[in-house]
Image (cartoon, rainbow, N blue to C red; front, side, top):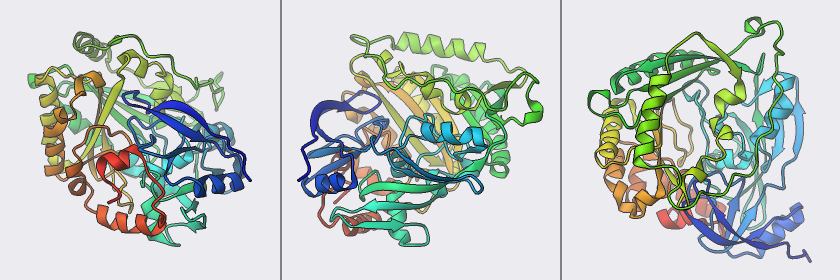
Length: 457
C-alpha cells in the first residue's frame, strides 16, 4: 500500500493568467508513481510549470509533479551522451557538463525547465535553423503508459510512438527518463554582434542573411527584438542579436574558459497589485528607449547563459503585469507568408495593444512530431497583459491570419486560440490522435489545454 502523498495548492502557468486549485501527487519511487497513475482516473503531468498557459494545469483529476525525479543517471564524457530522469532541469545538466566541455545543443529562453517538459513541448532555441528542436537530439526515452506498462522509444524503435511523444504536450504518457546527445563546447562564453534595423523589411533581411550562416553553424544563435510601439514605416524596426560561441583564443588572458555560474532564483516574486507596471504608455516608452539605446558596437563577450536564457534573469517579469498576469501568443508562418508578421503587428498597434515584448526568429525544418510547433519559416512571440484578453475572441482575427497562411500557434504558450482552427494549424492532428489513443487505452492523460482545444477527440 503506497501512502497518500497528495497535497492541494493553487497552480498556474508561468504567465499567471489562469489558476487552478489542484490535487498534487509527488511520488518518490517507481512503485509509487505506478500506483498513483493506476489509482487516478485522470492525470495531468507537470514539470517545472514554465509553460505560459494551461498546458500543465488540470482540467480534472490529479496533477503528477515530476520535479522530484531529477537524477542524472549517467554521462558518457567521451561521446557526450547523458541519461537523466525526466524531472531533471536543463540547468542541472548544464551545470554538470559545461565545465567538462559539453553543452545541450538546444536551450530555450530558460534553463529552468525539465527534460520531460522540453521533450513534451519540443522546445527550440535561437539556433533552430542549424540545430533543430530538442527532439532532434533525444536518442531514446522511456514512457510509462496509462496501463502501467513501460516502453522504450526512439526514432528507430516504435517511431510513431516516439514522435507522438516529442511535442505531444504530456498526453501520451509519463516520460520517465531520456538519453540526450550533447555537443562540444570549447568555452562557456559567447560573442554578441548587434544590428539595429529601421523597419520590418530590414529586420527580416538581416534575419534571412544570418539564417544562412546558422544553417551552416548550429551553434550560432540569433534573435530579433521588435519595437512593438513603432508604426507606419517604422513598423517592425528592432534590434537583432547574433551570438556565436567564443573560442579560448578570443578570451582575455584573465578570463577563465568557463565562467562561474550564478545561482538562478527558483521562486518569482508575488504579482504586483492591480495592473502592475505594464500599461500602454510604459510599453511604448520603454520600447522606444530600448531601440534608441540599442546602438550597434564592437562584438561583446558575455556568459552563454546570459546570451541564451534571458528569462532566467527576468524572474519578476510576470509579476510586473499585475494580478491578472500575462499571455504570450507565439505563432509560426512559412517564410513566404512574412506579410502576416506585418499584419499581426499592425493589428495590435491599431487596437492600442502594443506588446510588452515582441521577438522574431527564424525557424528551420521541424521534426516528425505531429504536434511539434516549429515549421520552416518565421516565429513571432508577443507578451500581452492578460487583462487585455479577458475576451479570448479578441485575437480570433490573428488566429485566422495564421491559419490561412499555413501557420500555427505554439501549444506550450497558448491560452486563447480558437479550437476550431487547431486541425488546420496542425494538419497531422488526426494521425497523432490515433497514436495517442493507442498509447493511452485507459484515456487517463488530460490537461486544461487538451480539454480547451479538444485535442483528444
